[in-house]
Image 1 (spheres, rainbow, N blue to C red):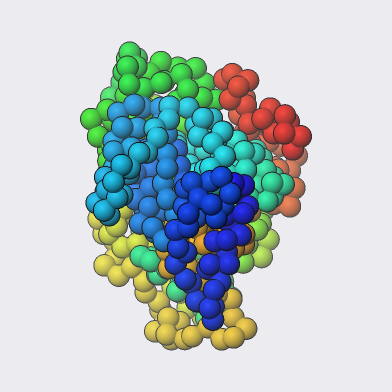
Image 2: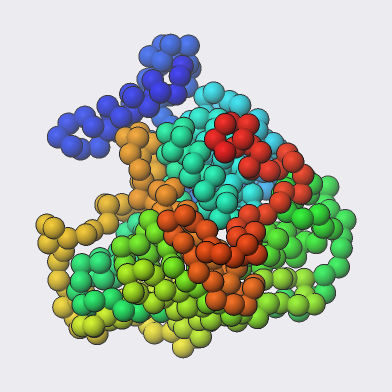
Length: 472
């Protein structure tokens, strides 16, 4: 059966009745021609580590809309844990003879015509490489934030999604109400003028600290395909502290703090908060016009990302966005008639994150200078979030309706761009002028060269993949 036939059925099932969502029934294979599976969205999990296990569990819970049929990871230990987890999930629901296929190579997942969608929870430097090929294979995609590693990759992924008319949800969960409604309330208050004219946004994204361990090469463990894990990143010896812990799935992986694989807190937490900031000021499809970043970078350490930082961005609407490691984790919006602050409170990105919330953080995750800023309701002409109680369910419903989810590819790309231009300014240690319409720096060849990265080997080059698909 073609995926489109099943999606059409799902769409009609969701729309049955007076605008109510009706749980689609499991139909016999004959209902879809030769297909013997059920009518639910067939999903594969690609990347089964710390974030992948959470993404898988969060999506798998929506049993009325989806069914997991495969998992994929380059670490055989993590792969087996994920495969067993999914099997046990369905067996606990009373099913028998549950078989979940485990894959080493994600290309084998993409070659299966019965798989409708994939969740991409691999390290940042692999996001675009996997997601672009999934889109080209006709799959809908949920991809962790930041949407890509580089600006060029973000543009490529956006191009692929729109050209192939696929659905992509970025893992910017702060856009969905549960469990962080504070961001929706604050951003709606700002966008609807309840603090007057917005002047300044102060953003805190936490601080990574040096590991205090010298970079010492190791032999890759037999259960990890390190060559493929390295992907497009520069050639370098394996170090467990720069990949992920071998004794735990929950442990914070070292690639997050290794610049060849992730850019540090500027994209780790920055992608979350910048996304909210740009939506609140109505710049979710634009970006800053200038950025001036200063930072200290880790040296003589197994980790290589920035530590302390101070960044000032100016947007064409006159709003100044300031990021500083001394700020409380969250967003403070300051206007001519008041201010409003929002954060996740004491919660971390994941339980293994270190400095996700400052020790002196306020106990309230949402506060305003005037109670009316938070109590006033948005009028019929106001700007409000698209309703979304659950980020994963929103993605599934978007696959069925074929309408953009709450964190679509265009806005995910812009969030990454703002973080990446900040990183480039930090690395060059000077102020840069950015053209958000052309998505490039103005008159600065050195900075523009940093918008992309040459792949270590041609087979990992996203640009070549796009050219082969005649999309570059």
